[in-house]
Image (cartoon, rainbow, N blue to C red; front, side, top):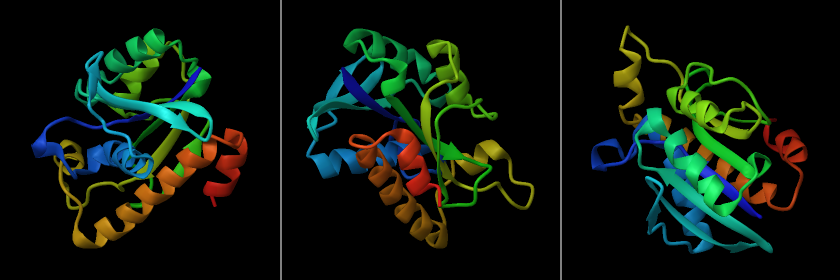
Length: 187
């Protein structure tokens, strides 16, 4: 059995460091910490695998674009025989203040199209997630323009801390039940 950490985002240089790509940023941080090279491509995604704390771990960044994330994750889970209980999805959340990190054991898509795709393809809402707040747009800005925009310098400080905290929570989940990790990190 393997643990699968999926960071949601959009592929391509034009989307790097945008609000919608914080999930990718956390996976990149974990790859850096663990010395993994995200260079395997299969199932419309890029991924890496290895052994961390005695556990087989897979890091994945779907390359399907956000709204089709489930098209990558489901085949990857099937190929590696990964149970939905061993999946943690990391993604941006408009309903949390910028830089806030919240862990949940399950839940609805909450209007997030990447999560809608995952719920559709996994046929359940019962999978773990780490949400990173990006706040809502101000001054009438369209949501699509906002999530595809880059962080301000002030926001970037909070986001960098959130990426570290989310990566810490992922690492902790390898040795600790998720309910306990939630208690520690949702403070």
